[in-house]
Every structure is written in C-alpha cells, then in structure tokens.
Length: 175
Image (cartoon, rainbow, N blue to C red; front, side, top):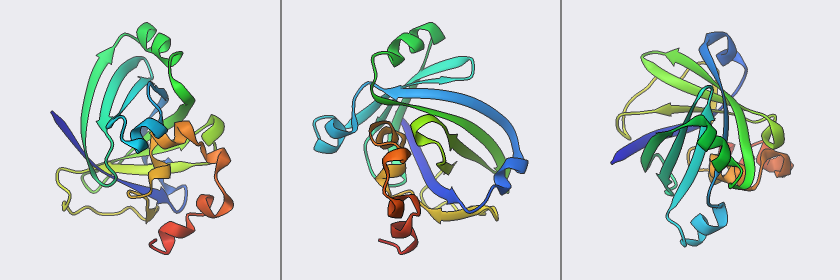
C-alpha cells in the first residue's frame, strides 16, 4: 500500500517558471464524482491520467489533509484515452512543472480549460512533520482546502469559483 504525504500551496508569483527543469502535459478525469466521495458512498477517488506519453490509473483515499492512501498502476495510453471518455465531471488539463529546491521536488500545476488561471504547487514529503525550505515564490498553504484537489476541480472548476474563492481570502485569514 502506498502512502502519499503531500502539501499544497498557491504560488505568490511566477518565480517557479525559471526554476522548472521539466514540463509535462497532463490530462486526467475521474471515474467517480466528488458527490459520491463527499457523501461517503465511495471512500476513494478513481482517476485516469495521461502524462505526456505514459498513462496511469490511480486510486486515492479521500482524506482531507496531508496524508492519504494512494495506489497507481500503469495502463496503455490507448486504454487511458478510452477510460477518459467514461469519466464523470470535466477533464482536468494542466502542465506540470518540476522544480528542485533545497533537496525537494516541487510540482507546480498550471491549469488550462475550465481551470485556466489556477496554479497550485505541491511537495511530497517522507513524513507529516518533515521540515522543508519554502522557495521565495511560495505563498499561502491550501492543503486543507478541498476545492484545490483535482477531483473537486473536475466537478467544480476554477471558472465557476466566486471571487473570494479565487482570491483565497479564507486561506489567508486561516479559516
């Protein structure tokens, strides 16, 4: 069983662009929707993702916060394309920028389509209390804000957010 320990942040500026050493286009969708997971009818999201020229089926437990169970399996790209046609909600399209900083890999997702304008940076850690250096371009933390999770973005994209949600006032004020 895989465990993912991840924290999400909103970049304060585009400083990550110059530091990125690799960019991979991604398209993903979910075989279940947010309502089923939020209601408790399903306790995990089931995602199909095409990352450049490879594809994966991913199952991730639905837990708010830094730690979740995660299982990922490679699938042939033609099968992933077929699975994407079966997905509910919208497709999440993004470029993932990989940025090394102080011994950690940051993944900065720049979204397109219905989520255009949103950028989220993530760091995976070995433990919940692992110390890490924040790059100067990192802003407010969004780990505990469900709307920034990809499953939520497939169901209610950034284009449908209210102005206060887009400005992340609740994150800044610590609510």
